[in-house]
Amino acid sequence: MKNIKQRIKSAVILLAILIPFLLIVYFGKIAGKVIGVSFYAIITTWAVYEVLSHSVLKKWQNVLIAILSSVIWMMPFDWYQIPVNTANIPNQEDSSSFLYLANHTGISITEVAIQIKKAIFFSTDTLTNFRALQISIIIIFISLIYLINLFVLKKPIKQKMISYFIAIFATWFIPLSFKTLFIYNASSLYFLFAIIIIPVVTDSFAYFGGSLLGKKLIKVGFAPKISPKKSWEGVFIGFLFGALFVFITMYLGHLTNNQKFVIFKNWKQLLAGIFLLPTVSIIGDLAFSGIKRLYEIKDFSNLIPGHGGYMDRFDSTSFVVLMTSAILFIN
Image (cartoon, rainbow, N blue to C red; front, side, top):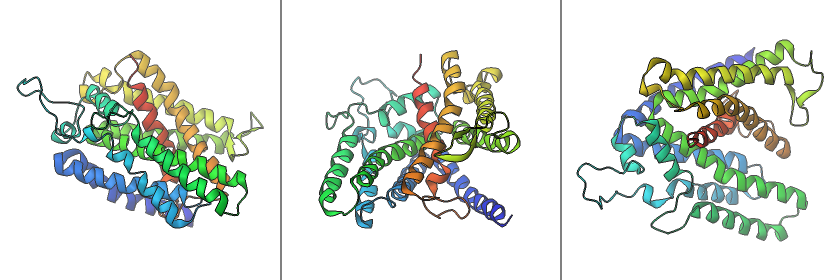
């Protein structure tokens, strides 16, 4: 009971801090977007460090790698570049630029997809003429650090390799998911709400379903080695309610004929979302639970009392965010 009260108290405090900030990012135009990039980038660095802090490396090395992960925010450089109107067309704006996002309070889902393609899915950076340069920098830097420590650290080779691959995963996946979340925040509060609540609905109903029916029909656990308490019944119920929530939120714009609530534009996207988003929400939870199992820890940190760290709370959300972005490109 004490733990539940602590969790509720922490959640209320966290929401009291986050809600005004999310509103500033959305309504604040250039100032709000600059604040948003800065804040999300700081959260990203901390979230990456949370995961890396349990690796075989020394603390200063983990801090250095976590800071390096911010290169995901810096590139592609021309996302931040002031667009040049080469065609000399009056009032013609480049909807793929950060400046376009900053100058508008809300943009359409088509423009969101254009932003995602430019800032997230590794389009060629015209200033460097490289594609996915940020990922290459991260992999090379981390590989060099681990190569040096391969001969210095007196740890089992298996432990070093596990730590290495977790570092590679965390330093690109977490920043990309938070950067995408920033774009959603700056683009549409409704879109942001839908994306954040999908994992909450899926996880909550999986918990209640598991509590009521867990292992009564199927005796074997869903993922006994990673998350022993998860049951097939709970996962199935969580998936059903998650899929229902996806259908309602993603189809609401078409039902009300209101473009502000349109997220998925065609039936292919809708079907993909109904099936994939609850699925990756469950996978995201398992993926980060698996990392904690490998590290032999309960939580990544105790930053949020009763909840753990950022990636203890946003594990499923990170997967849902990136999968939603991929679905937007289904024609």
